[in-house]
Length: 170
Image (cartoon, rainbow, N blue to C red; front, side, top):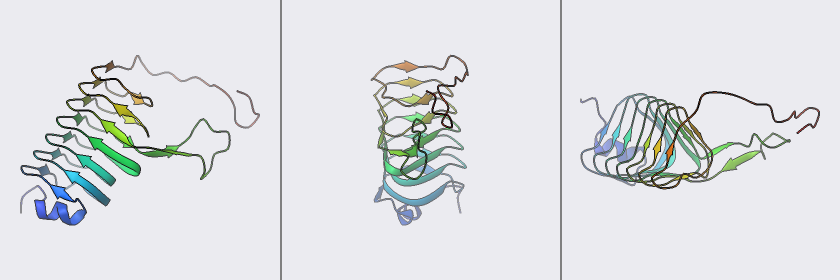
């Protein structure tokens, strides 16, 4: 036995097709998976994938990533990659709503353009499209579309309070 899943094992998890030259660690976890995996895809240790996911040729997922496609499809185009500890979420709570609860969810597809790199610790939220050849610096929270070729960086960590749900202030 090797340290990588075979093509047959990946198909048994639920992928409709799996290309050649894939290297998926046996420590990766799949839950209710569907979608496709292209040629030369690499998925590193302790990554979790769930839902409808399309990984085109030459995609790389670093260790400890979480791709949750339970509210839409995640598509990573050819040559794209994500650094360690990234999360791509197609469904999330809507933290801007006053009335939190089951209805307070947002959902949408995520698309990562070809040859795009996403740094360690980034979070990509529902409905985001990141264009081709973009570069996302480490620990960014991406809630809006990124144009092709754009470079996005974080300028430190800060929080602000914009209102209070209990007393209705905004």
